Image (cartoon, rainbow, N blue to C red; front, side, top):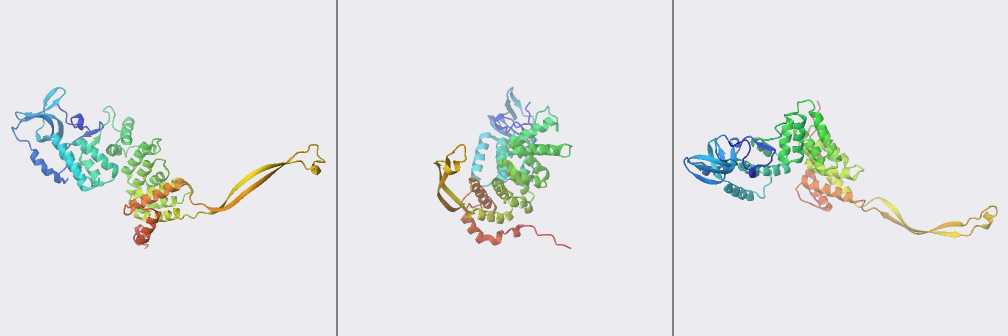
Length: 419
């Protein structure tokens, strides 16, 4: 017997930890490319030679394997030989034709972003055509770039994928939790999403909060990142204080980025407060992290503080000071006869002679960390505005022309009226 729980065929299995529970998407999904499916309908009595094919079954699942149809009976080739397909076949097409069409469609969407509705429809089309592994890989890449895009998250639900762990592990057991965390921390973006959804089902159980805290304090940056992702999926942006601290202080750039995304989904620009305050930190790395986090959060209210900080970094006039370039020599004199008259030992005298010049200078640059801080500020400004990269002078000119539209006050929520 052929099992249809997994997508058959080793070449199409996207990951050993992904299980396909269904194929056909709900009718609510609008896929214009589905009009091409009419030509794939199976004609009764028609025979098909043995080829690599994709069969869409009546029960909604896809079978991707070497298949043939003889005397109206569809069969697939397994290790034991040819076995009949027990569920009626609604549609079939050659795997090579499906892959060729998929590549052509991908080229037509080359310039479309991963969150573009057309690309989301393309992913759904791949899945409907039985190209499950291709759909999963493309979806993982899209989620890596846009982890909170609602269309993509909806598609994950509609594709009906779930995480598969060892059968011997009881759901919710400590071993099961460790296995799920391992997939979420070290897998691709799709596995991370599925692992988070599996673990969130345990959120009402005792110990779930302790699990989250342990993940966020783990020595592995991958585990810490997944812990923040799980927190974000569980509580949205309610844990913004945790996210804010990590976004400023964690040594891993990917962990800091994940924390900043946690503050982004809250949708409240007031969470910028700690980052703006950190821009005045005495530690250059903290200032750099704050600038990068403000860009990731995506709040327009951050533009004015970033412009102010960039102006301070570009001022050029540091505090005035003095620098001395001196040469010092030691001169040895004979002992002073008058002083040594009353001494038992007459010691020679050593006199230092200093010569050189004292210069009036001022600091033009302090260290390389200032350069990276300025780069982080400019990068965040580009993220928040028009995406154009500029130097410091270019941003100053941009601010003069657009200041009226980008003041912080305009983008902060208005205080509630008092009774």
